[in-house]
Length: 462
Image (cartoon, rainbow, N blue to C red; front, side, top):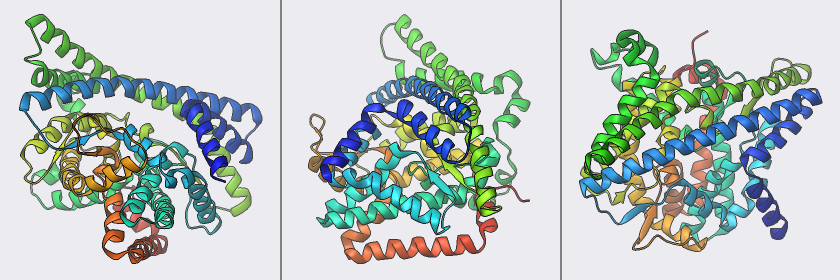
């Protein structure tokens, strides 16, 4: 069985999202009753959209990584826990025994939940199953028990489905994505921070009335409030802070202007790529709706996708760009934090993307929530770094030169891995029982009054 799973994982890895996802979407659309021609075109268009999204994200990744490293160097920050980036975290997660089994485990959990009507989400985002594997790998590392790790991975898959269902209405309304949910465990864990921040800000006179969504900013500031111009301005400011000492005047000017133009391009191109994605998703969403109406009356079914489709919103991009210097500053001033940011600054848009529907695109609130989540994340990453490093060594990961401990913003900064691993660390198998019980209670109250939960998560009142 291990040989078969290794071969399956190797095939999926070699195909990549832009090839395998269109194939999966094609067969899902056929099963849901779409005509073969429409199903085929939907798969191809979705694949093209993800190629475009990945190209733009790559542009942003390169730009933010370079300026982030420059800021760290300028400030002279030195720490002993090195941020190795989410690709390294994913490689570690899939490189463990838990990673070998995570795909069939997550699929079985999803099927079971759909059959029992515990979820509306059909999660086709199989590449991000690595988040489940990462949590399972942390649990296996702390317990020394593979079975505990596999159970933890299954519970993580269930948690992702619950968070996806809970936030689906807000995502669909705010982003204009009918029939879509986001079972992504880099993005969905931000929901509690957003709800808490909304509650806190609502109690502060003046701040609670401040409107700071992209449309309001555009109306107030005219052309200077356009998302493209905001991206340019933020890029220029970051460029000056990071590259002011990068060489002679010409070199500095080229780097600063280049960063500004790159981030302006991201602000324009990402929404365009998402609109192409929606063109491909519409036939699948319609087929899913008709399929469920024929077989289950009014029951809904959501297609669970990567949160990459969310980060193209101007509020998400603007917030993430503003949080880059905030993250660098926090790494400098937080007492007790041992983390130096290096490779993962460009993942901040994924961390904050779920804030936008919960906060109606209010950038001020989103920056506050993002700062809070990053602040907590530095301490979680410091706390979890021994386990992260242990799992990396078990997976045969090559440690960076002179690095004693490693982490990443993607999962190393987030509460689900810490919750799972530390409960098992202190309570053994009873830690997993507590996680399952907490999830069960949350699901019970959610299903008992879904509308109240959805409104709390930013869904519009009917």
